[in-house]
Length: 228
Image 1: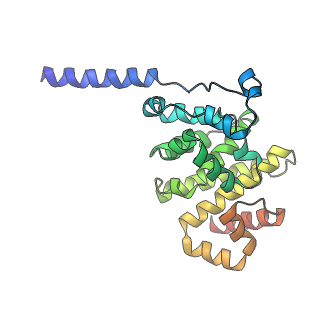
Image 2: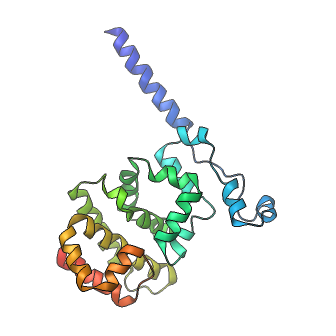
Image 3: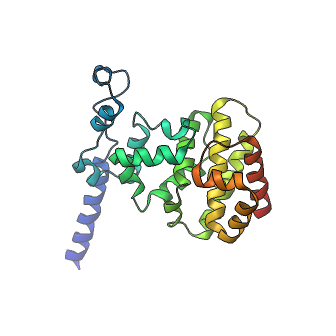
């Protein structure tokens, strides 16, 4: 019995030490430094940001997420007008994002972060979380109750930002809408198909994430209110 207890204790200590050793990866190149200025092409900068396999094997989900947030081109996930196109391009060229999206427990971590009442200082971070949570593959690791809770959280955040016309706040209405319609599709495929059949603009937005018209955002909100 003592041997079993000792083995369990050693295992717990090993896991704790391994987690304590994990921390966000520091890129050898960042905007503004001398190495960044020397690299002419986008591709060269991306290549220098490649995370070593030895780091990817050990880094925790939490620290990998922070590493991706610190990625010099992570801002494109929010600022570009077509999220899905940008997401697929970065996922194919940057191994950190590719590894992150393959982590089974990622959606739970993002959900916890997103569900917090973040101040405006966290808005940009929150927009990236919203867009990543809209990726359909992640929904496979959420049950129906969790999807509904996430939909409610997104709906509440939309209402907090709806009257703000500053660039990021307006951008957040777009990311909110994209997450909500993707969740609706995941929760009730038949209802989504009916909405998409009658609203070509909503269907196009959900499938392409191309920057929508304001009326499309308002139509999505109306559908979410009816669904809730």
